[in-house]
Amino acid sequence: MATKASRSAARVMIAPSVLLLLGWMLIPLALTLYFSVLRYNLLMPGANPFVGVENYTYFLTDPAFTDAIINTLLLVGGVLTITVLGGIALAILLDQPMWGQGIVRILVIAPFFVMPTVSALVWKNMFMNPVNGLFAYLAKAIGMQPFDFFAAAPLASIIGIVSWQWLPFATLILLTAMQSLDSEQLEAAEMDGAGPLARFRHIMLPHMARAITVVILIQTIFLLSIFAEILVTTNGGPGTASTNLTFLVYAESLLRFDVGTGSAGGVVAIILANIVAIFLMRMIGKNLDT
Amino acid sequence: MGRIALHGVTKNFGDTEVIRPLDLEIEDGEFVVFVGPSGCGKSTLLRLIAGLEDVTAGRIEIDGTDATGVPPAKRGLAMVFQSYALYPHMSVRKNIAFPMRMAGIDKVEQNRRIDAAAAALNLTDYLDRRPGQLSGGQRQRVAIGRAIVREPAAFLFDEPLSNLDAALRVGMRMEISELHTRLKTTMVYVTHDQVEAMTMADKIVVLQDGVIEQVGSPLDLYREPRNLFVAGFIGSPKMNLMTGDEAVRRGATTFGIRPEHIIASPSEGLWQGTVGVSEHLGSDTFFHVHMKDHPAPITVRAGGEVSLHHGDTIYLTPDETRIHRFDVQGMRLT
Ligand SMILES: Nc1ncnc2c1ncn2[C@@H]1O[C@H](COP(=O)(O)OP(=O)(O)OP(=O)(O)O)[C@@H](O)[C@H]1O
Ligand SMILES: [Mg+2]
Image (cartoon, rainbow over all chains, first blue to last red; front, side, top):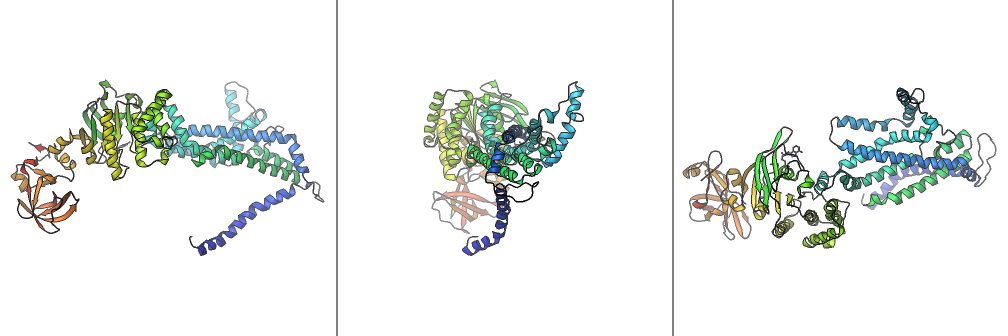
């Protein structure tokens, strides 16, 4: 692709897909922006007058909004903490030579292939159900009161489920990082007098830093928009105890048929996600340079 | 102090016996080179001494005390790896400081030793760089620096120069030899390059298939190779080995003569042959001479300016006082 002719030919060739992608992104975004400044409720058909920032004011001053922000941050932070720490531990374990390594690795990766709705339902009905669930059964077996997960600790339960889903991803990425660590480096450190902990701290962890950064960035993007798990388990409740931003937008626009406020919420969510992304990039993006 | 002794040491990987029962004494302050063809177990032997591999049987003594079960860090040995094994995320200074940091040596002493090592190894200007920003030779020096600051009882080198280009290799060879004369610390050095072995060693250990073929000073090995393998391995170019009438006449199954112990002449001599390939090095010329009743060409060293060309007739006379005779088993006859 060196000559001028071939370069402009290439530009013409990829133009359709670029335009398609652009339209794909821009049209919904433009529509969302447009709806967010209209009074537009599906239960009140008729004119959709322009109302300026009214929808935004309404969405941002809603007490549920603060709750949703806090819940979103707790959800993302909690899941990131669990998956990164667990992923590091599992990656180091799976990197050890052991019997049945292949099968164990496949088993560890498996949860990633289960659809979010399905896994949430499985957890809800088979494990965490206070009457029929496995945990309730175990609790009863040792003579304890069954714990009603989704009523007593809804957000924590959802964090648990989502962590279970994302742990394989973190493990997989970190395991590949571990495997690319030169064993002579570990041996050199061993000869230099570094014990297992010091080897982890000074050799393995810095080696994995970049992979950890990637895990955090990718997961944050997906975790900000967790939805299915909340919908099928708690429906955002009790009250707003497990409502995150995505779910709040859904509740506004679809449960109350208020397209205007929903759109405003969507725009707010986009802005917040970008703030988080910039913040993350600033904080850990420098790991990617070195 | 750095006296290392191996008694009946063996090593198996699964069913394969990589090191056969082996005894070896390394004296304090000696420069010992393990040399042998690829896969003969040199690295394995070094790693056994370092403690990075467990012996299958036998005993390793360091300074007279049993070190067989002692973990690597406690043996007081420092190792320089073939891949250098520098810590890529640490600066050169931190790399060199790492073993001292692990040993809990105080900062002032750390800096004193780092500066001394850096000065000795010409690294002072690079202390704040990362290993990725250094050339191969500089990385090698950092690895050596990291070994020196520990003030170990012995240094272990595993083919440290094999990643360097020829010129740099000669330079680093000198530097390591110089380091040895200065520090007077025991050094165990693995290489498959017999020139490195000959130039650096006080004592060479020739290995083949996990067995020690011969131990001795470079000149011992050159003058009196114990068997055919050592005879063929030590010396460059290789010793000429002949069987048949010429050998029988000298009372041996095989006899050997080094290229530098044959007199070449265009007019007269014991053997007659034709010149094949010739290698002109300036100072020396090596002729590959084809003889009628001998399949492999005979290598001969002649002065730099001997003018013989491909296809010319050449006469060779071996120096009968410098021939090597071997019996049916390939062992040296005296
Ligand atoms: N971890 C291991 N598992 C099984 N076999 C091994 C292992 N390490 C080495 N070997 C085998 O042991 C033999 C000796 O290996 P070693 O690395 O000591 O050779 P070497 O003399 O250092 O060769 P080179 O000059 O190529 O480095 C080889 O045949 C090798 O295949
Ligand atoms: Mg080796």
